[in-house]
Image (cartoon, rainbow, N blue to C red; front, side, top):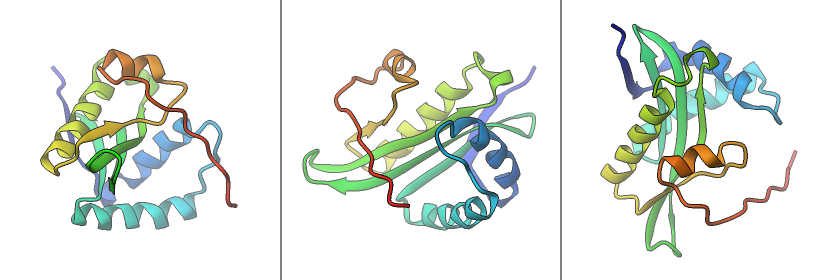
Length: 145
């Protein structure tokens, strides 16, 4: 029987995370050189408790990842954790991998003193509503490059 476990990502997970990222980014085109630079930086800022980059694994194989950032805001009266990326290998969906990653992000947010977890999404709205999230805002973006 296989067991799904979540843990902080490390350098050995880069290839698996990049492969998953390619399936996540439908309106972006991930470039490996930029990914490598950014992945290394994300791993280093996890030390300061402002970022959570987690992987889910089954029998030692990475099958999903989640990336969240924590920042202080005035309107919520404290730090907010924003779940930016959640991706599960399509062949592994329906097994609770995404839920395990979201729950791990929530627990890390609580432990870090965050007052809420937000998720900017359009495609996965119904998924997050099922997990107890409430729709509160529309996100807009302005590309700078």
